[in-house]
Image 1 (cartoon, rainbow, N blue to C red):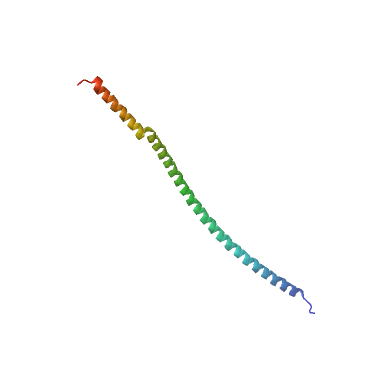
Image 2: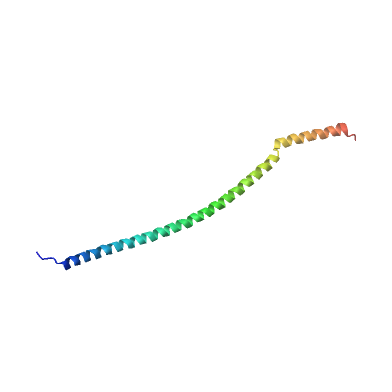
Length: 107
């Protein structure tokens, strides 16, 4: 068996340390690349979320406008009469006109 000197041990330790440091360096680079990719994805999601928010604001405005229009239409419909009521009123007016012509207005 050979005698291992202090220098041999230091070479082995330095070599092992260098291998470990290179491995750590590679892992940190891979982690950094993954972190960059994740940051890009998050930035993209933030932009998409902002666009969705703008779209939601537009939809809310449109819905408020549509609700207002519906209320106005309902109010106008409440002021109108249906055909049956119109026919009843028309018949009544005709009767009254005939009565006036027959009994009140002498020609």
